[in-house]
Length: 410
Image (tube, rainbow, N blue to C red; front, side):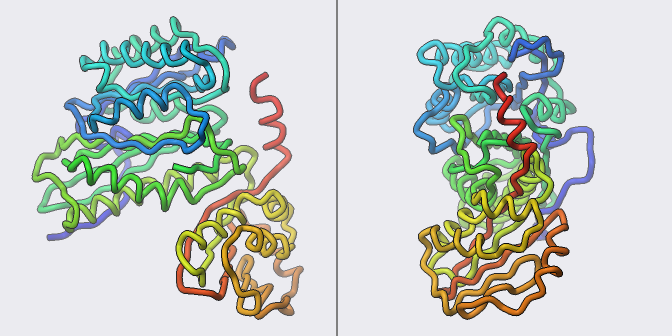
C-alpha cells in the first residue's frame, strides 16, 4: 500500500477548498468603515456535517468569537465557519458576544445548519463595535456565492496587514483513494502564537475519529505555528480550526494506524507551509531566520531557547542590519531559562561557527556579514547538556514594522 504526503498540483479548488466537499465565498462589508470595496467577510462550508477540532489563543483576554467557537466545539462537529477581518470583536463586552452569535445565526441560515454547527473568527482592531448590519448583509451575499473554486477568495478576505494570501495543500493516498488536506491562514503582525493575529482554517476529506483529529491538530500546531515569531505579541483572537468531512469515503482513520500517520504527515506539511508563509510576510520583513537549538536537556528547553532568540529585538535588528553580533544571540539563550554548559556550547551563524568551548572562534566577521545579506539565515546553537532539539522561525525587525503599527488603528 503506497502512502505519502506531497504537495498538490495547481487546481481550480485551491487552499481550504481543495479537499472534496468544501465550498467558500467572500463579500465586502467595509468592516472598518473606510469605504473599502475589498472583501472582508468569508464563509467556509462543508457539504456534510464534519468532525471538527480547534486550538485557540492562551491569552487571558479572549475575543468574543474565540469564546463562542470554543463552546460550539465541545460537540466536536461543525458544518460552517464565518470569518471577518478589520475588527477583532475583542474587549467589546456583552454586545461583542451578541454580535458573534448574530454572525453565527446568519451563517447557519445561509448554510442550512444549526447555529451550534457554525464556528466564528474575527481579526483586526481591538475594542471597536462590529458594524453588524453590513456584516450580516455580506454573510448573506457570500452565502449565495458558495463554490469549491472560491477558496482563494476566502483567503484574500481574511487578510489584514498581510500583503498576500496564504494557502497550502497536501495529499496522501490510501488503497488507491486520494485524500487531501488544504488550508488558509492570515497573519503578518502580533505573531508569537501560544496555542498572533494568526487565524488558520484547515480542511480534509478524510474520515477521522474526533479524538484523533484534535490530537493531530495539537501536535501539528506545536511544531508549526507555535515555532514562529514576528514581534513577540500573542493575540486575543488566535485560532486554528480543522474540519474533516469524510467526503472521499472509506474507513474512519483511527489512532495508531499507518493511515493516521499519513494524515498526520499531510497536516504537518500544510501547517508548516502556512507558518513559513506567515513569517515571510511579516510586517516590514526583509529577512527570515531559523534557530535550531540542539544538545538541550529536553525538547521543551530547546524550544524555549529557540523562541527566545527569534523574539529578541536585539537579535532581530542585528539580522536586519547584517551585523554579525553573535553575543546578542548567546545572551538571549542565556536568559531563556534553558539549561546550558557554556564550556561545551557552540554557536553557528549563517554557516560560520562563531563561539565554541567557552570563547569566540577566529572567524572572519566580514565574511559573516556578507553571508547575512541573504534573505534566509540559519542559526544553530548547541547547549551541550543533552540530546533534545527544536527549531523556531523568526524575522528581522525593521522601521517599516514600526511605521505600520504606529498607524494601525488610525
